[in-house]
Length: 249
Image (cartoon, rainbow, N blue to C red; front, side):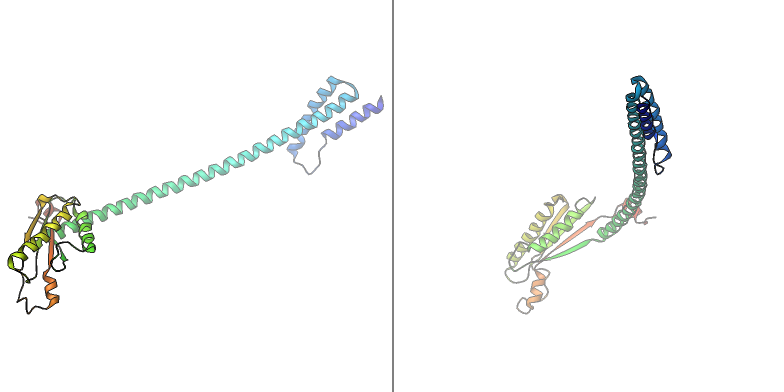
């Protein structure tokens, strides 16, 4: 009987003892578990009760300690995530400030560009488009150039367009007159296709009337310069426009 009792006591002591290398908190948890185990052992009674109580107490204390470690790790994870979120919020705030600054700069550029465009259109923006002999259709690259500029200007308030067609002096006067007008009308079609109202486009055919010299003596390169259409984008100066430019009384 004494042997069983001593064995139970010894096992109980083993259950509640901890290595010195473990943390003090672990010892406290396991000692608390040993106390709980002693209660259970007392209920069972005798040496078997002491053994069971020691085992249960050690298990209870170990699990409690592990739970505390898990909670500590979770706290560290949450703290790290909070730090990350704080950093992201700081970065976001900085990005918003930079975006606002960029928007202000773009607004200033737009205002400056609008002013320069207005000045340019008041003077008149002129484009010359060359043609091959007897043709009324623009080369593809010239069409692309024309429609790109017309698209850019299509929404400009008060915009007007004048299209002047020309021909070289070879051929009859009537033929050249019709050819120059046909070229101008074709350009008007291209411009209106990108959104400029045809009512804002005026066309003229000048034939060979602007040619200087005789067709038999003019160099071929000079003849090529006569086969053209001139497109002029312009705006009539208004009171608002003059005020924007800083003019007026």
